[in-house]
Image (cartoon, rainbow, N blue to C red; front, side):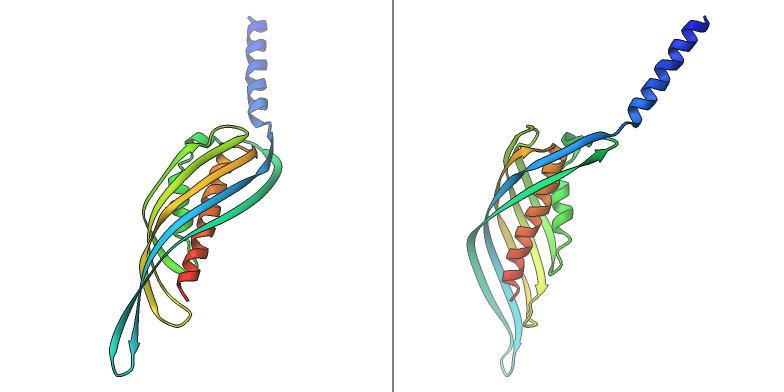
Length: 181
């Protein structure tokens, strides 16, 4: 009986020790983002002697961006990338725009983001944007488009999704800044 208690105690201690051990994480690779964006913005401003004026501008453009990443370290609890919702990550990132207020109308992502060495997919989005440009004019409008994503290298699903949300937000913030002149 003592032997059985000793063996089960050793097993419990071994499980506790194994759960406390950190996992070495190495992530290295590159990502390519190709964004096709259509914008429609309205500008309102006061014109002396005329009153409130409203201009409309629209544009279609493509932006390419390549990012390299390298990260290593220890992680006590490995992230489960499949449980992280990419759309929620992107929505949180986009709503932190420094130049304007952004409301996400729709984001849909699809693709293979769980493969270890190669991830590929696309995200379609629709946004409402309001802000004040450097000229003091008030802007409001919509942005819609698609971003094609290709990630190569050793990376987890969680890291890939974080990278996609962060870089997509940067691309769209850049487009917003160009519109708010």
